[in-house]
Length: 296
Image (cartoon, rainbow, N blue to C red; front, side, top):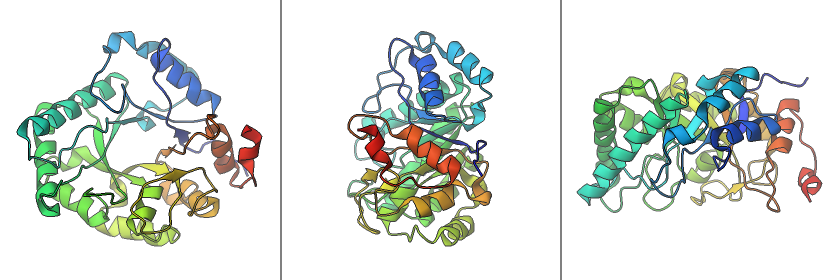
């Protein structure tokens, strides 16, 4: 039976001239019931003023289509690294940018900001984790929005932190503002980090034991180009990678995760977005063989 109530969407753009109105239109064209976006380019901190982004027009269209704004997701830019204090000015820049992104997220009436925990850059994992908690405390001391930060589970490239549930838990435990923190579980990342992603209930049980499912705010649904434990972080289209549709569908349509937004970050195929096809398969709960051929 088709599940049209599934809370699922993808990353969408925020481009001129339609900006947020265009983001909403793009998501609706995919049959999405939620979506994720960056409030500017992910590679830098330059941001257009909010009044230029056609936010109210986008919000009106969301309301008309019965999209729950509390399930929308914003992603922080990649340039921040709150784990690294080797250069104080860069550490302070990360704090400033995260604070700004929380305020911008609130301006869209979204409630979730996904953040990569960062990399310790040869300082050691314990030091890096302590730095992240310190940075988050400084952010929350000055930020009083109702937006929560979802720390993303990472694949383990280089000196990335947050590659185990225990490391995420450490960050939360060290932070004074625990009620402002949650988690973004990325299926490709946990696969590449070394978790047996195919043991779906076992993964959810372990997550619940270590962190608590009540802190799971969003799931990034991605297949992986690499086998378990590769530490590569290379996303693949649904059903074309090492994880496969059957396993990913067990996350997407899991009754324990029914209220959690699921976001696709799978790559374009032949310069075309795959999201309408991928969303439809999850809503139907059935894999369509060679579905990418239809994009050619």
